Length: 97
Image (cartoon, rainbow, N blue to C red; front, side, top):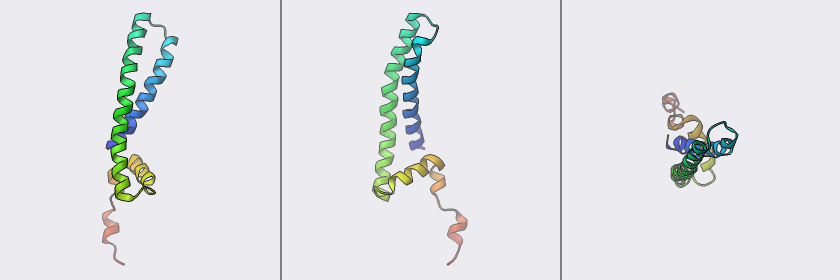
């Protein structure tokens, strides 16, 4: 869950940068445009660094637990399926040799 929140925050920060680039094309008054741009300029790095802190902590834990070579695969599975997708199914653990 933390990984998803972190990646989402980082993606939203990039969308904020795109919104800043689109602001001059919108038909809104100049003072509102400046206010929106200032708010986006403040929010963008906060979202980026907050997301990076969340993703980085989870990546470091995964690297220590699974090794550096397995970390990208593990993080992709967590991002795609969530933590529950990594748990072995009860049917698989009950199966005998």
